[in-house]
Length: 168
Length: 221
Image (cartoon, rainbow over all chains, first blue to last red; front, side, top):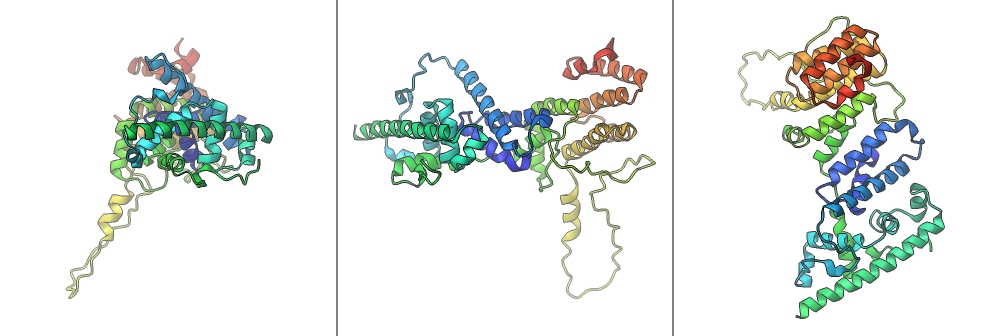
């Protein structure tokens, strides 16, 4: 189970919002939980268990990180981007792009984010997502639709901000 | 909406694609993977791991690793669905304190002094020794894994043999605390209550801050 799922769990944690410097520990935590509860995990449902644990661990990690922050504003606005990149060229920097992606994903609800990440970034089918997250397929489809709309809005806003900055 | 829905990363929006594809770099390091393996009691993967990498694991994750390993040692959990029992070497009636058997110890070939016109390079010999010898941490984990596996399968004498071997090989080992805690549990589970009690007290004296003590229960009363 570990060898088969470690990488996808690690990636998912990162994309569910665990900071890059905390994701190793978070992945370890997921598997420690799995080890402790091995007898409770249904055969064939290992990935489902790991995903649900990963989502919980990621949620805790995000909350803990948020508590550590001193800023009061938790709104979804991308205006909170503290250091907007000066030109679109900077986006060629993958790290900066990754940072921006995090910021966009951070504005999603947990429910939407998990479905969006698994479909768009992990490349899973909606049927597989429904199975792994133990959700009806209709729920997955509607969450994905809303997540994509949300993503598109945020990306458009981000693009506009960047273009404006570039012109100035 | 169907599963054949085009993914945004395959769409026409370059900016969006660039954002999404930036996540391609989300890849765990080998160091993190190995540390997680160790933490849940699986030991170091069979895949080759350089001594340098092993050293980094040892230094970088010592505290978390030891704590986590302790947790899994306490539970005797092995994260594996494999139905077959852990690899069990043949019964060893006599305790052998020796290097891990995985190390190839082919007898040193006595190289006769033969004059060779074109000396054929023999890179194998030094390479084999260097590559096969496990790092300190690897060897510690392996030995402790064996002890834990024996304990889990209620072969307590065998577990004690491995623990004694651990102590003799790694008197100041990184996982010594875990080994000592496992010894207390093994003695207790084997019904050797008095010995377990003494070991538990010794353990607490040696590791007053250890979280393992809580699991010793009545042994410390």
